[in-house]
Amino acid sequence: MKKFLITLSFLLSSYAFSCPEVLDHDIRVLDSSENINLCKYENKVVLAVNVASRCGFVYQYEALQDLYAKYKEDDFVILGFPSRDFMYQEYSEESKVKEFCSTEYGVTFPMFATSPVKGSKANSFYKTLTEISGQKPGWNFHKYLISREGEVLSFDTSVEPDSEELTKQINKLL
Image 1: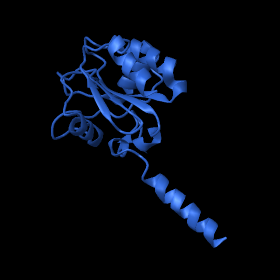
Image 2: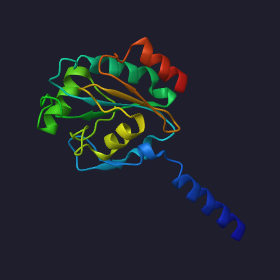
Image 3: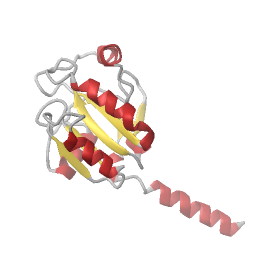
Image 4: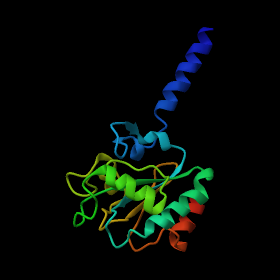
């Protein structure tokens, strides 16, 4: 019995350290008081996108939702991060962001609290993404593709969610 407990203890402690550093952040869910640790998405390929409901690139929500629907069964997830960093193109009320995403684009991928994504006020996750990738978001709908091992690839706003450039990398990581 003692050997079993020691083995179980070792396995649990090993599991606790298996989450890539890039995901180990507590982030509040959109229009909620609930916080989750992004380690919830470990062992998945993650596409993190800073979004804005009133941006000229808002049409990308449709392709993002299609991408999520296509690959979610393959351990792929998109994480949306509304931000007002670029010309305040996001609603200031999170309830409006949530409603807009749901009614206009049928978004079902996880969305998180409106927060800064660049500079010293960026949320902790985006600070880490910027540090690891060496690139900060230049505008809304910048994309970071995170491998299961925590490696980060950065894609400019102009790279469409359904582009060959991005989908080729997603398929490679899956």
